[in-house]
Amino acid sequence: MKVISKQKNSCQCIICGLYNEAGVKAPFYNMEDGSVMSKFRFQSIHQSYPGRVHGGLVTAMLDDMGLRALWAKQSSEEQLGVTMKLDTNYRKPVPYDTDLIGKGILVKDSPHFFTVKSEIMDTEGNVLANGTVKYIKLNAGEILQNTPVHEEMFCLEEDGVTEIVFKK
Image (cartoon, rainbow, N blue to C red):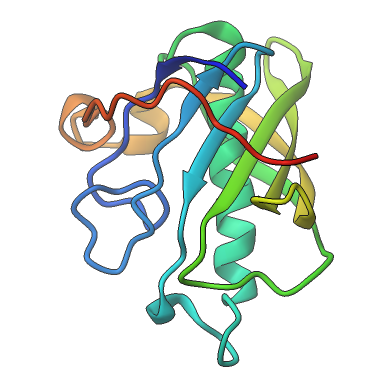
């Protein structure tokens, strides 16, 4: 699927933080169908049982794709939100040290809330985990308190990715 643009990363987020030593450092892309996608790898430091990623990090990835799905649909990274409810379905073990694909799509948007469906797949298109996430929209000051938005939330490193391919 064709990439329209790349989203900015944060600096320290466990999922997208570019400077978090234990982080996944996942890149996120606005896609031609209005979704957000990521091609990423969990590492062995993210394990629970050997060969498997900790379920909390799987859920964290599903959650991170949520706000980003709103940004993909609105073509803006101005609106922020906080998770109110997240339902995760663990379908198959999520491996580390292998390419994975995340996808999130906005399914409901209102002035104060939004809902996203997100999933993690292997490169064959098999769904390993998926979920539905509901968020409340809040302004940056309510979420970040005294942290300047530009310092934490908006690190952009272009990587030339123009397409994300997986089998379906």
